[in-house]
Length: 315
Image 1 (tube, helix red, strand yellow):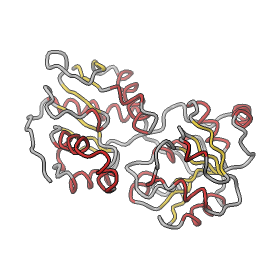
Image 2 (tube, helix red, strand yellow; image 1 turned 180 degrees about the vertical axis):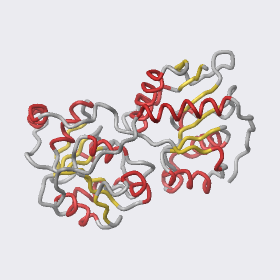
Image 3 (cartoon, one colour; image 1 turned 135 degrees about the vertical axis):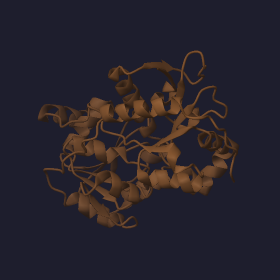
């Protein structure tokens, strides 16, 4: 069976891009079918179309469509709804019309049923995973990356995108929270991030460098107040580094007692938990991208034979 896959998502520097790149590679390596990288599917060439991000969802797909819905945070933020306006509403309408919707957690499955009225039998939970590149690195690699980015000997680490306001990740508040260890921020950054007080901002790094930065950190802090999955803590544990995260539903589901969870609105407690973390870290999650690919191929088979029923928008 041939599947059209919107690989444009892989160029995204955020977790969406990591998801698209990792899943596409695992799907190809599985050898279970053919993958056509396109966002314009044709019924003569593919049996199913998969958009691994909201941006690629089609209002009128010529073949049964699968959409991956990573979270519904924009629907909860009035500013985001106003900024994206009609475009966002049309993408969500297209997602409602998908014959199958992939979500990374049961939390997002519930959000999709409540907010988009997508029936539960059209939603499948397929978790994300740490890419194989994320593993504990030797001392020499850690020392090299520490020198390259002028990192302190001991530091707390935050990883994510810093080009936008990142309101739900609350990076600015984290930077202003009292702490004993230096804070390192890794990810594509804008001017506002460079102006944060008393932090080291590396900018975007390669995956190998990130794995070494994870390995060298005292602990990873994850202050997100809302999340669909949280790939950063999973990658950190794969590199052997402890995690402190806010106690939100997705983190309880994904980490399953592998991290120190603190109250969502108490960043001081989050910092304390990170600074008090000790090694060895908890065992990493066993779920792999190969597992995710196998589950996704099964879903493609189901989607190819599902009746295509277009749905109208619900306000």
